[in-house]
Image 1 (cartoon, rainbow, N blue to C red):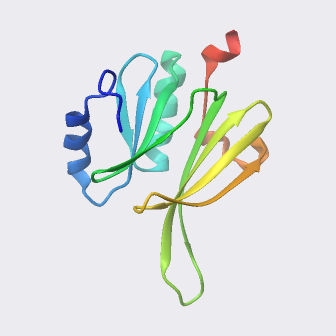
Image 2: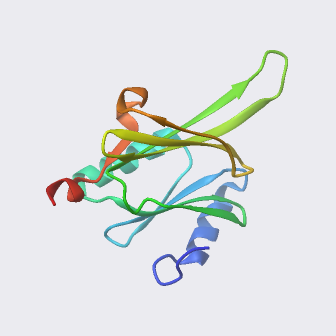
Length: 144
C-alpha cells in the first residue's frame, strides 16, 4: 500500500507496534519526513510543525495493524482531522475518524469507522463546519 520509494514501511510498523490498539494516521510531509499521529491533539502538534516549517502532507494513510488505506490528498488546499466517539442510548459506542479535504470553498468529509477502516459516511461541508485548530493548510499551494 505504501510507496516504498517514499515511506519506509518497517518504520511505520515499528511505530504502530508502540500502541497496537491505535488507528494511526501516517503522513508523508513535503520535506520527505513521515509523521504518525493517532489523536486530534497529536494532529494539532503536526499542524504546528507544518506551519512553522512551511510543510504540507503529500501522502496520507490510515493504518490499523497490517490494514492500511491510502487517502488521495493530491489536490487539497487544506486537510482536516478530528477523532470522536458516537453511540446510541443503551447501545455500543463507535470510534470514528473524520478526514476533510479542502478544495476551493468546499470540504469533502469522510467519516471512517476505526479500527475497521470502513467508510461510514461521505458528505460535502464548508469551513464553518470544521474546528479551525485542526485544519492544516497547504501554504505552498496558496503561493502558486
